[in-house]
Length: 182
Image 1 (cartoon, one colour):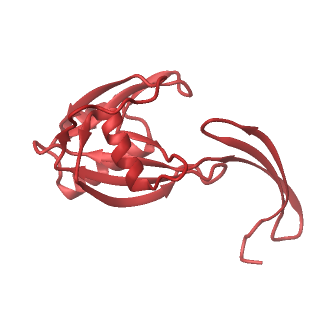
Image 2: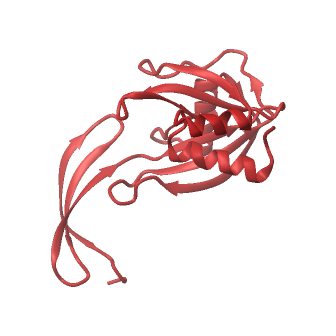
């Protein structure tokens, strides 16, 4: 057994939804004892850092029910079955912002909440943005407002906690360190 590895003994599926599934695993611990783990299974997601030729960050504001408030975020969305991360990134960019690009650069991938969820977010930088000829329709239950902000405006939104999620905080650090925004 690998150091600290927990071996699954039994899995109970609790809920299977449109976005997530919940399961409870009985696990064998490295010391031979057993425990339970409540786990959220997620197909994975992408997040896009869209920077205009003028050096503005394209963001969306939307209501987040889990927090009971609106947040300003970089565009993002979940992977669909059979869809790779780059394909998802291009689709989500167009659906949420109305922009397209031929210049999509992989930045990184990270786990959002490894203590209880297996979601991995793949982050892409999108530059050389062009307005799509006809915007793809987004999800029927998704309402977003498009924003194009300077680095200074985004940093103020972060101080005001209008930007309050990890992927967007990461994006702001990334564009600042790379000197991609004005």
